[in-house]
Amino acid sequence: MTDAVGVLEEEPPAAASLFGDRIDVVRQYTRDLAKYGEELGLIGPLELPRLWTRHVINSGLLAPLLVAGRVGDIGSGAGLPGLVLAAARPDTHLILIEPMERRTDWLRTEADRLGLTNVEIVRARAEEATISPYLDQVTARAVSALSKLIPIAAPLVRTGGQVLFLKGARVTEEVIAARKAIARNHLVDGEVLELGVGFVEETTRVFRATVD
Image (cartoon, rainbow, N blue to C red):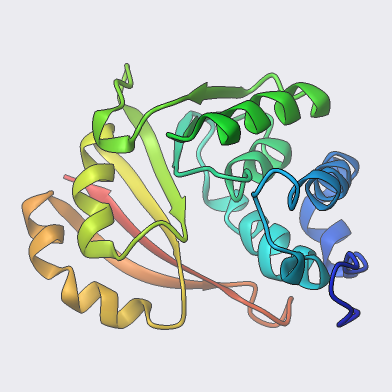
């Protein structure tokens, strides 16, 4: 990996193992995001030297936890994790929920460019989105604290479905602060998972819970 600002990080060895026969699609997405991301305001130049490890692989580690059903991604932005997950899991239908027009334009264009037929774009704030039928799972990355995210995400999920939120190192503190939101929104079996231990340098932390 290089520290040079504006230079795309070399693909880490773990990427091919993680994405398997879908690696070429993920490689194309990563190149496209590096090429257009700064210009479109999706990422900053400081992200290029860590685009694979901090963003793409971080998102891709969530793929094995998805069901082969309808999965929503709140605040998809650049497609992290939504487009990465759609590329990694063609058996899963991804509904990418994003309120900003220039970002939904990018998501739609990039999904077409990558040939992803399992992607649906919804331009809306999550709390205003009309999603039918209810989702089997919903995810979000770098959107907001759990106490604010849970009340807008859980109502989109069917009973027995799951929330899967990618979080940072302080996720345990967020869970404690979100106890009331967890109870009000009927989330049970909440747990914090650390994905990629012993496999990648930067592991991924996920808060997972079931809607009761």
